[in-house]
Amino acid sequence: MNPLRRYETIMEVLLAQKEVTVNELSERLEVTGKTIREDLAKLEEKGLLIRIHGGAMLAQSDQLGILSAKEPNIKHADKKSEIASLALRYIQPRDIIALDGGSTTLEIARRLDNQPLTVVTNDLYIISELVHKDEIRLVVPGGYRLRNMLAGPEAVDYVRGLNIQKSFISATGVHLLHGFTIYTNDLVEYKRALISSSATVYGVIDHFKFGQCALRTFASLSEVSMILTDSGLSEETAQQFRDTGIGIETL
Image (cartoon, rainbow, N blue to C red; front, side, top):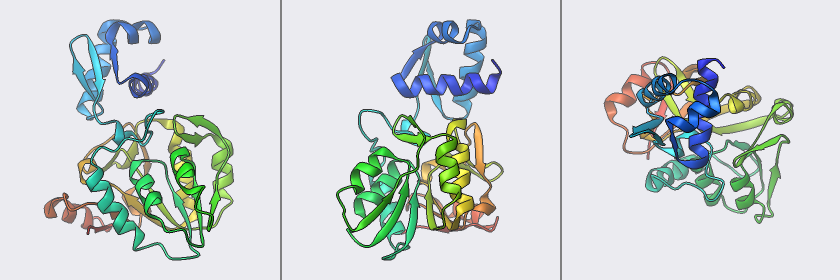
């Protein structure tokens, strides 16, 4: 198994159980404990996990874009509320929008009025939130279930055939050099499909994720029209990103 695939498997295990030992990973991946410890060190450098005695624990599960199978993650809820309030300013009745999976986009869904609107989403929590708002036309792609998300070629092909006006995209991190990143390859093509099918793409990214870089890049900064973020972002960091040509907006 190549190193990148090992990293993805380690993160998948951590997402499922929050903590894991070196021995568990060594047996599962059929590599030495030394190799696992080196892998954990590299993932810790990226801010994706925290090494503990004999293993590792998940750093910030809400950054991964995939939520717990048991309940939505509401870490930094106040920041997500700010971003959701900002996003609502860009949503008008009869718009065709896409809500990517994640806790920030879930907050947007919660705040949507029951109004004539088409919403495309692959997030099961968002689907559950919107299914009772009968004025909203809910469009759900196919695919297999990955935690709270629908993913796979079927979902990608479906989205590529749509005409979406505005997409609201989540990420694990946003970096000046590496752009928008996530930790697993399973969702890269779906996010790419949303971007290619949308007239306008908004990144909904809390300030903790700026400067962070995960394993997989799914979009360059130039492919996103604007980043909507919270008031915690420093002006210095915001200006660094604006200098690349991308818009940054906060409440």
